[in-house]
Amino acid sequence: MSNNANFFVTGWDHIVDVNAYDHVLFVMALCAAYRLVQWRQIVIIITAFTLGHSGTLILCALDVIPTNPDVVDLLIPFTIMLTAVVNVSRHDHEEGGTDTKLKYGAALGFGLVHGLAFANNFKVILFEESILVPLLLFNLGIEVGQIFIVVLLMGALWLYSNYLSGDHSKWNQFLSGACFGVATILLVEALNQPEQAPAGVLPF
Image (cartoon, rainbow, N blue to C red; front, side, top):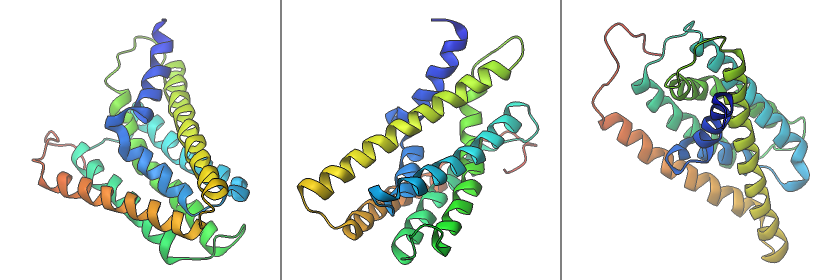
């Protein structure tokens, strides 16, 4: 496997690896409120998340934005929890609705936060020449992993809806509640961890 291919695999692993389930939880929370027929909204909201974390990933990889892992570990659970709360507290999920527009903006903004964690993973890989190709491949690996998770989630929703005659509101409540609960545990764990950021690093 070439060195460049390793960047794609690392990006993929950062999404599908069991130890990276915080990002999977956020993708699940983003999609939980939408039905299968609303696939356009799902595509748009995942794209907004992609644009957000891609921009931050590039800036962090170029050392334009410093990162503090301790603060990132606090912010990521918060993004999951807030998304889950919006899912169950708002009911305007139709295309073009106020809630949908709000979630597009939140996905973009929260993507900026998740990009900080992606960048921390990317920086551990050494490269010698231009970072453009490694950066693109790493980001592509993340996107393919993200799409993989969405396909699995939508497949589970299809089975639930068609074979179990499940109600989508219950699906949304269960999935959002589960994401909120796990994110709460992650937040508590992050609060209880000793600070690891080196002195002089800005807290974002």
